[in-house]
Amino acid sequence: EVLDAGGLVALPGFVDLHTHLREPGREDTETIETGSRAAALGGYTAVFAMANTDPVADNAVVVEHVWRRGREVGLVDVHPVGAVTVGLRGERLAELGTMARSAAGVRVFSDDGHCVADPLVMRRALEYTKALDAVVAQHAEEPRLTVGAQAHEGEAAARLGLAGWPAVAEESIVARDCLLARHVGARLHVCHVSTEGTADVLRWAKARGTRVSAEVTPHHLLLDDSRLSGYDPVNKVNPPLRTGSDAAALRAALAEGVVDCVATDHAPHAAQDKDCEWSAARPGMLGLQTALPIVVRTMVEPGLLDWRGVARVMSERPAEIAGLPDQGRPIAVGEPATLALVDPAGRWTVRGADLASIAANTPYEGMELPGTVVATLLRGTPTARDGKAAS
Ligand code: DOR
Ligand code: ZN
Ligand code: ZN
Image (cartoon, rainbow, N blue to C red; front, top):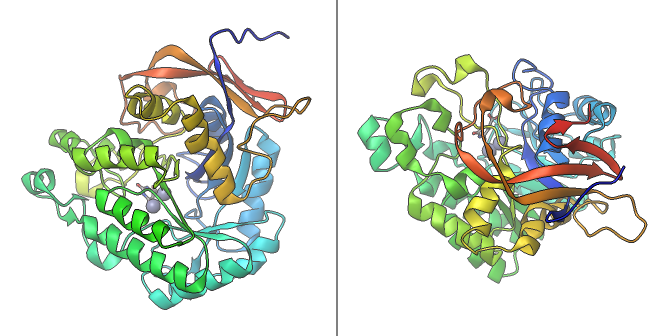
């Protein structure tokens, strides 16, 4: 079958370091199958499934289940992220080595969903992951500074009477863990950077030779807390939407390389957990099918990144950070392709109900976005084509 690739851009398949697939536990909002379809349609060929499932992916049984189910579905490489700790308050380290040696071969461990507040636990986590040649992906929240927090601490939150989530809750723990990672000589990955101050901390840490990498979400590149005037919980997310100048600083930091890559933090939620009062709503937004268009809008259109740069932030850097040798690189002659074919002139209007996810909580409802994924190939096999997933 011949594919007319005239005018299209070929990119290495995208790698998402941060996807919530909700299986096991919340299959009413997303499954590994539906999330894999969304990923393939979004141009992804590998996703990292976050550990805050039910039960939590803090042991070999759960990570092997996620890994096997991903292989059965076969649309995208699903790599389970292991939880750093066991227990609700993250007081005890999980058996990282058991997950690393399991069939899932876990190499990314995270506290996303249950923060590691204790510096000694984080230090031990860094020591173990260093020994395993793995990485800690930290949620970057000092929970003792976000008690009750509902939105970015600032004018919008004050006007709505919502408790504020200060920038320092993120910046202080990123600084702490950069220092710990440097002390241990371990690798740290910072999830969903949301403030200008965090970019400054990262710049400082990297200049001092810290082995730290970082991701930014599409929504923190595009959206800001002016969206809160409508009081619609679709805009509720952790970390919260920050100010317009934070978003501008994040775009600049991504262009500069201080922030290494884009990760979706794809977070499906049931309608009843979003169509409710703000304080009762769950935080999070869908991201897999809209990530590339948002990067085109925020980075390519203003000239902050060219297509080479898009390949770097969507594919090459995340593959390097996670240690995936067969993703995130140009196709060698004769090798089965793992790639996304993008039509830069394509335009589409986002409809939550039309997305492949079971949930529909997109903040981009009704928005016309640039850049369509025409086809996705995983090791030579089409996984999505013209807006339809292969299975
Ligand atoms: O907005 C978020 N949603 N942030 C997180 O850290 C967790 C995620 C989720 O699981 O829904
Ligand atoms: Zn998080
Ligand atoms: Zn997350």
